[in-house]
Structures are given as C-alpha cells and as structure tokens.
Length: 156
Image (tube, rainbow, N blue to C red; front, top):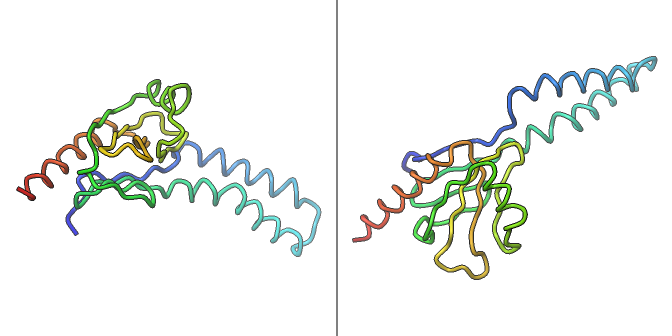
C-alpha cells in the first residue's frame, strides 16, 4: 500500500482533556466519598468509562486519501467517483449541515471541527455528496485532486 497523500485523525482538542480530568476527579470524589473500596472501585470504573472513553473513541475517526480512495471513518469512496471538491469554512459547513442540508448526503463529521470538505459524486443517486470534517480543508481537497489525477493518468 502506498503512503497516504493525506492522513488526519479527528481527535478532540487537547485543551479539553484537563477539563475532562477535573470532571472525572470531582465525580469520583463526590459520588464515592465516605464509602469503602468495594464501592469506590466500581465508581472509578464507571466514571472513567462514562467521561473518558466516549471522547477518546470518537477521536479515533481517521480521514485518509490513499491508493485512489478517500477513506473517512469506516467508509471508502473511490476518487474517480468524485466530480467536484469544495473546501468549506466554519460558516459554510454550518450551512451545509443545517439549512442547506440534503438528507441523503453522507456525513462524516465531528462537531468540534468547524471546517470540512464537500465532495460531489458523479452518480448522485442515492447519495448526492459527502461532507467530511477536516482541520485542513484546502490540503484535503488538493490531496483528493492529485490522487484523482494520478488514478486517471495510470488508467490512460
């Protein structure tokens, strides 16, 4: 497998982890205070599982462009199926996810990432376009375009 021309993990901001740690600490001390170790350990496991695991797991989403494919999370899209690529800033992303949204669109988004890329497909039935969150929309768009050109050049 060739190196990815774009590879990005959509993790939560690092600045959120201290706040999560404070919430976990207060929750553990508040809920388990005055109890024995028999109660304290399950409370620790529950609170960590409730407050730490979901942000960690949601940050595992990966956006990659490699081997003629745009991979976003568990979904793959051949770059040859893409007709138009539009980098979206925070406001344009908000509009495309809200008032201007198409219910049939494929969304691979994370709320803490404001920018995205919209890729229109050559066969708009049943999915007219994908919106993929990215911190670097211009770079992702350029990677898709260069990968698409490379695939087309290899076919001819």
